[in-house]
Length: 230
Image (cartoon, rainbow, N blue to C red; front, side):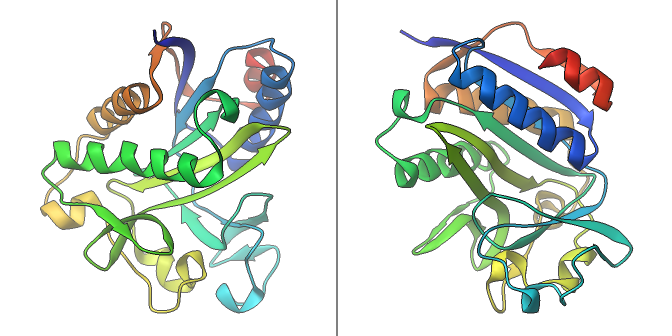
């Protein structure tokens, strides 16, 4: 029987607001005060660096890059870019209730995006020993997670119709020679971002055997609004 879960959907959220929201929801999920939750959103332009990041991957400036802020965070992986047109998903889940451990969890997240891309007839898959989702040798989705006291945070980022130029300023995910693509580039046309968001939510529910309660959707999320949700 599917478990009931919460879907939070926002058009665009400043990275620090979303980061703080994740931490608040994680504490509440650990305390059994809320059900498992998926946050879907986009970010204004920002770079983030995970635990395996090295200054050589982004040039060494610890404050900003190409005029955009840079945040060092607790997720796995190295440096990546987030911006409008990229769908970001932050699952807040009690991991043991879904799978045996982090490797299986990452595979499940990849499955969500591979199924989503198949809806647009994009033949996505995996590359052994590399996280994320790939189309040929080009990366279309990045992943980096953190598990704190058995609860997940951070997650996945799917390039839908995002400006790819900022990726040229970094070594994406710390992978030398990594080439990045998007759904819009592969299909040669604009992509309905709302349709992709709906597909990701649907496939996430299928892969994790969840049933969404009525989604909470807001165009923007301020720090004050985030505190009311969490």
